[in-house]
Length: 261
Length: 261
Image (cartoon, rainbow over all chains, first blue to last red; front, top):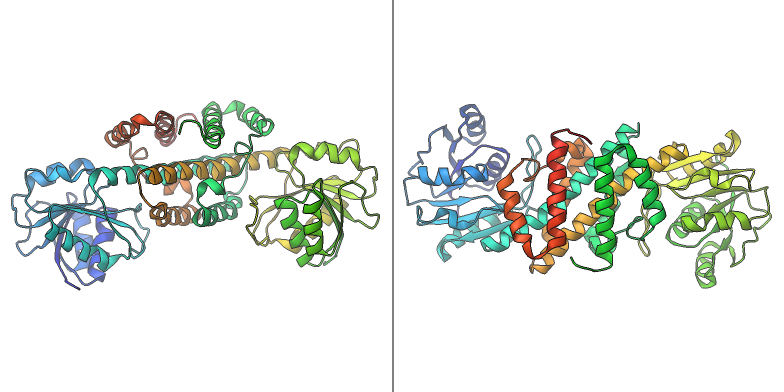
């Protein structure tokens, strides 16, 4: 079934903007963009042919309202939405669906598992979308909308979604941090960061095929204490990085001993 | 200039084998594969049309000998190589070129900055090769050979190469570890690890374009203490992972405050 919906977006940040554009491309109608910063709302609404505003007063023709604000602001937005007729959804990985209780009748969660950055265009068709809804009928609507923009749709309750979000932070944000630290260390030593790119490409390619555990290499994986000691010595003038190096190397050694993870 | 060289490989592990095959494809001649495990040497030598053996007795026609053993075994191999006529190189990121002193006359380092895994085929043309040599004439030979298999060749002294290697470990091995921990956490909660792949692809794509520092997202980057506390609570039954989560989150928060990294 292909149904088209009238939608409203509250919050015109990276995620709200990308989602609104993807929904419009899929044939849905953007009615209204609501955002604290009026200029941001205006710029996005022009791309969508929607109206815009700073006050939360939902257009009566709306089928669904996406709350795309910061997680902290979701309860405020819910309190300000007087009308109980629309289907309200938030887009947060770590906010339980129970946040809508008892203010709403029809609600759900529509969480795209991806990180959205300003000015970086992104295709939705490959992004996993994790759904949860207050009723079977509402779930059907969310599924319909999710499949109109992505091929990867999952039903997931709030507890499991929170765990999925946490796993994603460990895998993606934490790894990004160590890549930043590595890049930074190279720069400080006059080396080009691009020298790392083939290594990172190969790592991701192996992870996709065999999983990260099998893809693991390096001195800590080999329990090569001599190399680890050399590295700790090089980092003697960088106490923070030295501490991290030691901590993570120990963690790797323990992990492959399969102790207490 | 295109010169072709007769080469010998000591050590038929992943790196030695991949390098030997790439050199042969580029037109060089494999004379001999020497390896402690004879069967491994035989299998590789057959692919190369080379002779093989377990004892270090270098074929007199050799131009260059690649020592592709574990780092720990490099000094042993050097001690066993009586002949001072050949050009000897090791392939190690963290071993100084001075390891060849005083046993050799002509020596150098030929370090491909990539991780090599058994049974994973890899193209050399994109791999950075870091070179160092005991003389200008020897450097010329190494450069000639390196450019015959890769487009990315760098001259780098032992100290800088060690730092480059360390930066690569922090960026690639450490990030791989956190991806493994994230995958593992998903599996334990019945979630498919493939759900992370679009996120990892997008991360690497952003890192290539903008660097990892700018690509960073997530609760610690936003200093979102509420989400971090939620995650720490979820991990209460996994003390090792909880400790790591806290440690790395603190590190991210400190890093973006630009304190003492």
